[in-house]
View 1: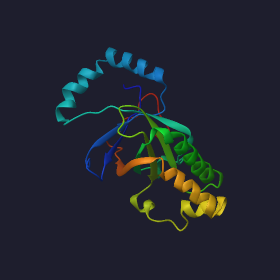
View 2: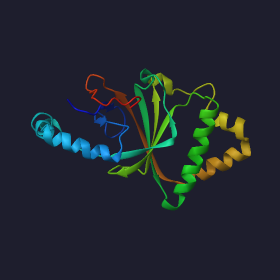
View 3: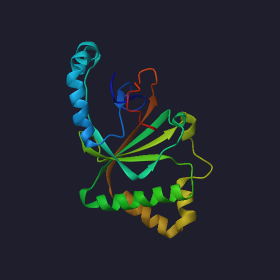
View 4: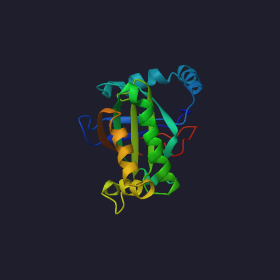
Amino acid sequence: DDPWSWNLWEITTGPRVGTIVARSGGHTWADFDAYQTWEQAAAASRHFESTVAPHLASVRSVIYVGDEENVYWPEDQAEARVVQVIGFDLYNEKMRDFVKAVNTYSKTIVEHNFDAHHYLAYNASGGEHDAILVLPGSAMADFSRPEKTVEQLMIEVHGEEAFRALEKAFNATIKDSDSFFAVYRPDLSVVGATVMAGN
């Protein structure tokens, strides 16, 4: 059996609608060596190539590293059955400003137990964007405008002037961005020997 858990998601909006994303999270860099050893011993690649690969138009492998300071994920995985993934292309010289701004947003949300769960990760290899922000929901309805927005919380906590300065600094770091929605596919997902909570 596969030692890793693989959660599969189907993209439902944007140019890649219908694309399946297979994600396994919570690993160290050394885990990749161990997985390759298992894969070779189990002949998993040959099995994949003979059974799954013929049905695929293309395959892409990427590694994103989660930012532990900016992870606020729901404890109940049922609250993450739909995700919005926002990709950011950043100006290199503005990376620190991006990190600083995101840290302020995330810290404020967490400290006030605000219902705005999120997961930030940075591209380590193969990714389309420098950073991605993942926003979970139990259903699409969760993405409707809330009674109180993050912007309103930030103004309430930091004041209008300070927030607008933060917002301006954050926006100045972004070269381009895009987003898509994806739904969880439990029927295709695999729970391996190493189960990753919330991933």
